[in-house]
Image 1: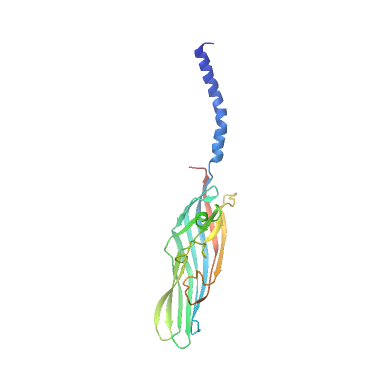
Image 2 (image 1 turned 30 degrees about the horizontal axis):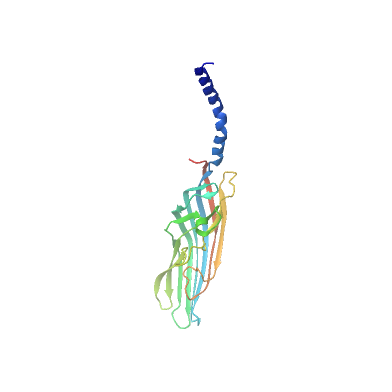
Length: 243
């Protein structure tokens, strides 16, 4: 066979074998392609708070109680291979259903009574991977439903005075403390299967009692309890490979 014909035949054979030879490499690439899921986030939580302050001689006692709800949403949250591809900012949130009350009593002084039904939270909050910050497993995330909520009260005292006070429920770790999961950092595992395409949902529950980390706590804090209950939802937008 002439040399020219042998070269042509070899080229034709190579083109015939190429798809079969490339098939394993294509399959490996497909297997390694990460799974990316895109969700909308929505949540609603209820928070209650009770704080008792009292002097050592019991001559002064202050009891503050409060409750409120927070709901929020984010339009785009991405999960890659079962891990949050974040952090993500949650700017669309609203605080409401507020009730706040404060009563102070003294042995021989001015007593005070405060009450309010309005709350305000304007600072954005976050959803972020829990592993870098807290050393949790890679599939865990830390959810911060709010950064700080102010509850406004109108007050009167036994001397006939009237004035305003504010109850602030803050989720910021006290200064000079290393980052730790606080009262409202909720650990959620996103490896749960979304087999029916309806999304993922977690029930949120957290309760802390004691003086350490108490919102508004100080030397005179004798008791403090904060609780949070609610629901966090990931509503699917799409699920696909790498874009």
